[in-house]
Amino acid sequence: MTVPTPYLLFPGNAAEALHHYRSVFGGELRLFDYATAGRHDGPGDAIAHGQLSGPVDLAAADAGADDDGVQMSGMFLSLLGTTDDSTLTGWFDALAAGGHVIDPLQQRPWGDYDGTLVDRYGIRWLIGFEG
Image (cartoon, rainbow, N blue to C red; front, side, top):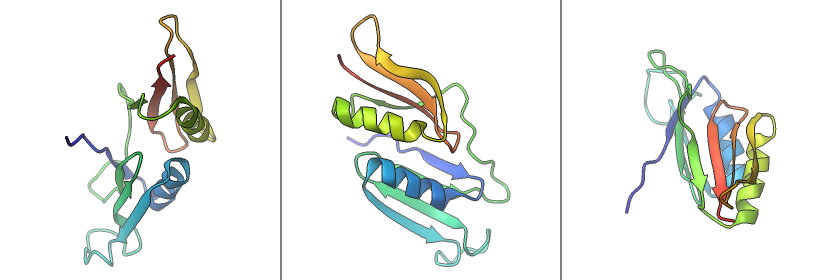
């Protein structure tokens, strides 16, 4: 079954963000700049397409002249129960570094654990696991 893969547009720092996400999640990272892609609708050294494939799949690019950079409101990227609790706790801590914890990763009254944060790139995450 296929699942939606977030495709994020960054304001000129897509390569930096994708390298950070690879350091958090692991996986294989492929980056293509505008020049390599043969595109002329952005700066030659800007990222026209980047793909992180692994435990967490993400795609991203540098926002073009007619695009807005990512702005998240009213949603989170959810990693609920996607791997073991130790890995999810590590991901929460790594994503929180340089960002802002909205609600700490903690046990809830129903017994499960979750927490929310905004990472250093403005991406909102919901991370948790069963108790």
